[in-house]
Image 1 (cartoon, rainbow, N blue to C red):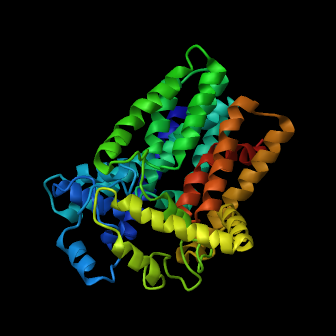
Image 2 (image 1 turned 90 degrees about the vertical axis):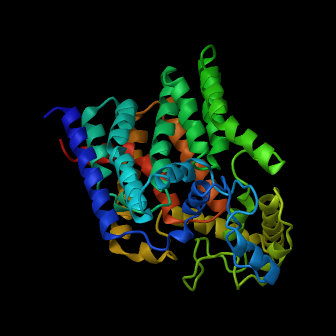
Image 3 (image 1 turned 120 degrees about the vertical axis):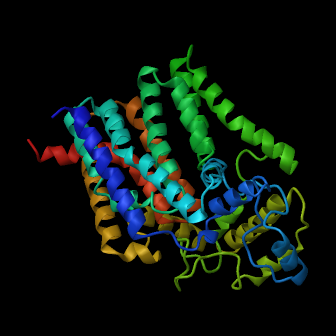
Length: 414
């Protein structure tokens, strides 16, 4: 059987498995997904905006929040997923049908992941057999399949993440895929705002290594990201590259009840709620204006600085704990205690570790090709260490290890 046909079969199986999971586990409480909230507001003519997702204590602020779902312009989320969601929700059908269509779209994108893994592995190792094993193994990592089953849109940035490190690896090694590198880095920055820094590093590295044509990557990335940044400057009256609330993300992993996960020890989500009345009151006091989200995020910045200053050792231990859970299991996430989460995750990590041992011993991959992957893993370990751990973030990062797993698997298939 030809390798093309095998890859097509793997992609079909990936799509079917994702569709089955989406049917078996339909999304509940769509209101908890900020992406859907913003998409609904776009469709209703409010534009890309939403009220800060908290329950006010002040009666006047509570009444204001109830009066409209979008009182000020915002950039609470990176734009790509809400815009995709809005495009689907705007179709003339009932919302349950729209959501099902959105999940179908996500399953189609997820169905392409084995092909992405194959292409990335083939570029790294120049070995069809290893690449096919890596692509096939992606079907066994159940948390990766689940990314298509919720409206969080994580399947989009999982696919873009694999594409970004692959394009960077090829660009640094051979000088190819330069504008593609810039395009996918720009797209991923508008899917995962924290990638912006690493995307610039990827594209600048291509310019340094490839000199004459290398500028294409960074220029393309700027063309992709700049319109959103300009929009934010106009709407929010301040320079906001992608999102407005980075310190809220840092705060969720650095506060008096932080566990390192997005969940507290009692199993509840860590949000600005009844456990943090001083923060809620502070949010109530922020004037409603175009800069609301930035002013609100400043509250979380102060909280983080105060926590870290008062508890430097505890903050350091939390960071180490987050990174440890990233490369193992999030013990606080309720669904992470299921064998279908634990077994595939630990198996993937074990096989990946074995593959990297083989890579180092045999010097199978050149430094220029391997370094983008290593930078991605180190950078995102630092990001999780500074913020907090969630399984969908772990899937995003571990998906980029998939091109390597075929090395270890084929070692026993002579």
